[in-house]
Length: 336
Image: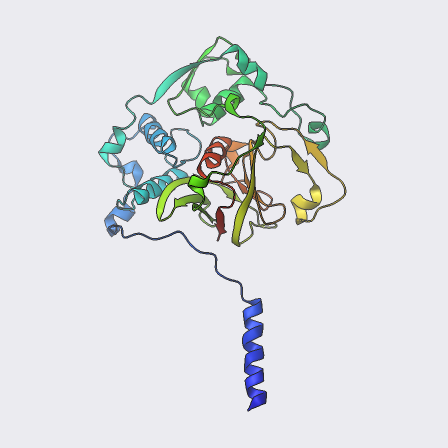
């Protein structure tokens, strides 16, 4: 009998050691369930649906911290996810149906941007190889078009489409460009350094859905923001589990180490890449208590949700800048 009891306790103990705890999921709140017809209704079935309507809706969600991905006048996967999460945050039916009142929130979808002289301070030489990037003083935008597109959360192709006949590859200070009327991402407002703890956000929690590819931020049971992400890759996936933010750096220097990037193991050979919007981790590094893993920006916003990352949680720079303002050191990050 003692032998059997010991065997059972051994098995239970062994199971407890190898079993991995399930990361917590986002809180659920009582919300009216959508009907089957509502769930199946498509966005393109909207009356008078066009690129302008799509842009207005993308801007509305983006301005409210529910990122639809890059603004391009198209109603894609990330738009629908942002809309559903916006509705969840306001205790509405979680459907992809666009109500008329949403269309009325952005009466003017476009504005103009006159390029100021100081914009040239953020444009400079580029390089693709880490050995060459390490020699530069900063990893700046490759062109003024690159700067304009990221400033207004847009695909470069969409900026070109909004400005037919204009040579956007030869932009210069003083030129005026038609752009989406979204709250701009201002690279000039960022400064190198570490964010100070914000006691008001101490209880906030971050949830990373690696399958659906989005990041949620909760304040107690209230959903306050959602952004599209790239969560790791097949060979180096984002680490499932519960972590916490150890530090938040703006305009960080990036240590490019092939051992870490390919295998998650630090090597003796590395390049230190200077800060800037075209640094591989973009304008932000929020490091987790998991070595070499963090939430960060990107040097190529049009690949978010599509191209793989090296085990980290990658966002567009304009979203990374907002994540910085919505979380604080010590916040729990649940990756599932």
